[in-house]
Image (cartoon, rainbow, N blue to C red; front, side, top):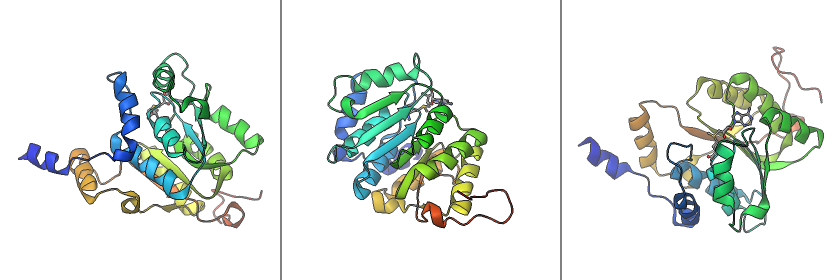
Length: 235
Ligand SMILES: C[S@@+](CC[C@H](N)C(=O)[O-])C[C@H]1O[C@@H](n2cnc3c(N)ncnc32)[C@H](O)[C@@H]1O
């Protein structure tokens, strides 16, 4: 019975992203972190729907999320920048998956801790349309990186979190919505079937989504400083 319900609710990946799965399955390394098909499809649909062109992610690893971003930005010849401190570990896998593909030239891998790389992006006043956070996920790192991501992100852009069931990510999301005015996307609008949500709840036994995405609806200059001195924005 349980198996039947699972089979009925199982996610059917989008045909449009089949190429990414083919690349990843050619040389997949068991036990390593690859994003699930449904998460990759959401990344792809979000970027396409809003014509996001400049993507940034923390955590390159196996390169799976980078590949979904690269496919989605192909039409607009957009770029993907990945920040990952781990040159001899996961990154080797991601580099291998991208090597020789037509996507490789639009991808930049910065091999250093994400907080250091992000502070330089802030110094350079670089802009992005889509930011995916999937590296170190204690609250202090996330808060620092969100502070910067909020400044790098274009109006209408999107910040997406992996592992959003984690308490630290949950707190970081509260910071984004309460203090910076971000709004969570309507997942159905980007092709998420209702059955997937039921499947996630049943398999994780939690109402917390495994990944979540938020749009910047209030421009930086209009994000009101809060009154309790937890957050303050003068510049
Ligand atoms: C879950 S994996 C990323 C998976 C990737 N998004 C994908 O789907 O293919 C997390 C990655 O974060 C990297 N990482 C952990 N802490 C980091 C930090 N402080 N700065 C940069 N990268 C970090 C690890 O090296 C690892 O490759």
